[in-house]
Length: 397
Image (tube, rainbow, N blue to C red; front, side, top):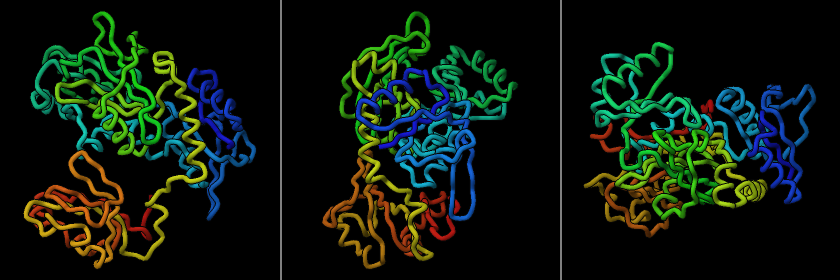
């Protein structure tokens, strides 16, 4: 395998370890500075130049895109994707996870525990927002902060108001988040590769510091995750559209509370803490994917107009309740069930004899007009239906 590691910091621990792990496995690997690419576009031929020379072919790309170069970095990753080069993390996934508000908006519609969060702009909305998340103390976060930078604890409502006013005066967008008291000063970092957690550590803040990041002086200890935490970490990674991620979770009284999904997780702290070859796990995963990669359904469904992917909700009282998938006769309407969502459970490619329950959601591919007719009328009146349509011929993604 010929691998490109996209990084502006070739001497950083994570970059060095990934290169070392690739070489140990007899792969060809080069570290390429993300900012040294030129993106060339013409009909039917997306292309890349590196340091003014035409880029040679690569089998896979491992992006390490820093927050300061998100826009250009994701553009380069997107170009590799359009050139059919396997990318360990896609540009779409990186963008989803980089913005804290965007990532929580995406997670909030799924059965994933997250601290109650609010985002306001008007000064008059600040006090009601603080009350809605449970009152002081509250956590105030910059939307694009990293490594604990831009995360503040306001002990009182007055302090929260002052901090938010100051940050907004500097044109900073901030989130107001519930303070999970039972997890003060500690969190869990799960390192996800593909569909499994390859390592996990608990980070504990020192002294009066409430942020547990290792970069803020936190102490790390290895931890064996129970099934609920491991499953949550993998689900969040997949929901974000990532394959390699660090998922930060608080240990709430009701289970995991997801704080952040990091698309370029550092290796030093977790490898040092656990003694595991995490870089090697990442390289092995990429090598396994190169010959049989996942595809972007939105771009590859080259079918006739009117077909796409949508969700069908099964409410209480629906004719689908207590019916098998075969009994719904969806296939006779040219609709194929791809995945069944039941609470927090995800059942891919469900059997035709699977019996449906109230509250189930079916991810389907087929005729959009037929699926639209299956959205309950009350749902259409009260709120926009949860439908993600992929008009293939008209897609601009």
